[in-house]
Length: 193
Image (cartoon, rainbow, N blue to C red; front, side):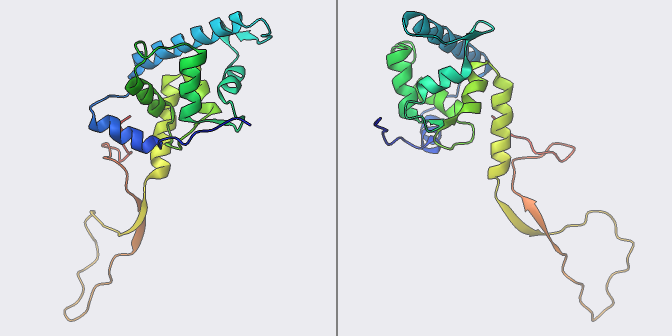
């Protein structure tokens, strides 16, 4: 049986990084890290005399790479599995990828803050699809936005006469709204990644 360590939740890592002023890797940094990971995976496979893995478009097979990292084979990578592979198998030293930067990379890859990286999240990273990671983060934020009932507001001028004196107007009906970040001029939600 493979030992699986308890890991710090991604949201806690995200908050701690923000408090310490550590930024998540930007697009250029993610692309560079993706290339470095692919190169290290390729070198690791070439060193293995028993490796029968395939290569696609100059990159290691994405599913094989994920399966190598997912040591307990549960379909998701924990931070501890990720860290062990980065340090032991891919041989990234702490001088090349300091612990805080490793955590920042983890937070950037765990786009849905699920405390695990799933196959699709890892594959987007290994394929260098930063836009795919950003899209998945936006989708996760939209799914996570709390939904509440709020009174409807009517900003258009009313063609109806005001209620007669002594009568009360009906309160506006409640509508389902989502608390999302600021909206653009068209009313579409804006998300920062």
